[in-house]
Image (cartoon, rainbow, N blue to C red; front, side, top):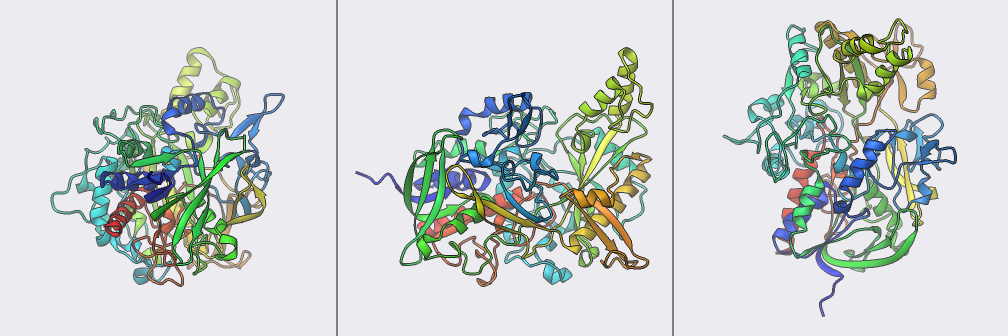
Length: 630
């Protein structure tokens, strides 16, 4: 009888990387077992939509299970206790002053000094289910920051190494774009290259920004231009899925699946008879044998999210791939101590596992235009300003891309609900009902038409430097329902990153002034920064150098940041085994049959949304594994 627990390849995690690799391996006839902590995604899509429609807090986590909030006896909802779930979940609802370090509400054991503001999913398809779809290539200089600008790190690969893999990922996921628009900052394409689908049409908001900044003076020597954003979202029917219907709901879930997510590729992978997925299977230890190769992976099973462990298992393979996300992968590696044989965890001879946690902290601004721009239509974003993703200024402060939002002030203040209630109740939380008058009938319609049709926002995704003091570890105190330690997070922002916020604020205000728009961005005070775990201050002199607060002649500014969900860097690739975890092929330096994939391999966060790059790297890793297996 064949051994049903031995495979060519075992993959931990069915998200973007795991799904793409499983499909490639299955198509080549290799036997694959995927250990997936979540439930079968095929049974959850309709339920997820219903949960989102009825959720009071429509945050990115709200459609998925287990529930992020539970009602008390009076019906008041508060974040669920992560110690009562077999799969803990992070949520933005626990980023308040009283909740971010409350272990009965926050899944991550946050140590500070600032709060890590991004969340992720641990269900079938993972975080990739609630991504926006943005599919940007990284400019060449993103891969060689140390060489070009003397800051951050160089990658062990360059743009030319990834160019073909980018194309393969774009066609696998189905990206809508026009290659002629994407050649900024020396991004290259093969002659005659075409994306799978034409671009998503620009919105009226995009057109208004484009017209408004046409006469704007260069910012730090760079002319700002609006560029259509490549998106893994159907502009025409593709992969047996409908074209985008403009629901403005790409995050957390596309109601018609016009947006690609990992479940699309996972479905295709499951058509291969050699691919098996074990749902509700939480990897608990990577076992290392006497030859220093990985010999098996142990896992725990459950039936219900709050019911505890029901069983356990162990699988063996020729090759092992950990694709469990940039927080859960280092967590698993660090948990795998092998009874003291690997006391610092698996693949961690360098000590770099869990270090260099990064995100794109967001500077968020919003304004009201003179004329209607008619937001709340189309995808959440169709264009951006990519001009400041690269430039000589990167030797002094962080770069950023600017995302143009189509969803009015939904992100900044929760509109259209907040403004609607202001005009119905006579309040003014949105700052658009200056008279404080309650409206009804035709007056209400007129007021809302004027207020809502002129709203738009900009999101500045700021580059964050890799720092040793930004880490993912294991909580010494808190565990989940399976008895596994929850992740412990330390997080901060460097001066280089903070000065990127200073530059973003200046550019933002200049854009609004050029458009003749009235800015409503919330002013952050010292009191806010002292009490809000997602706020900080930065003091700088006339030369843009960061100096101690109170320095004569210096300027102090206060900022709030938001998480982009672009979690990277916690098991980075490199060319030196003493300061990196994997090589350029994403193979562990320590264990030659172990591969670590996903955005955790990024040495830097770079300047684009990470999904396309991690997908390209996943296809590269699949090719390497196939070559290994012969």
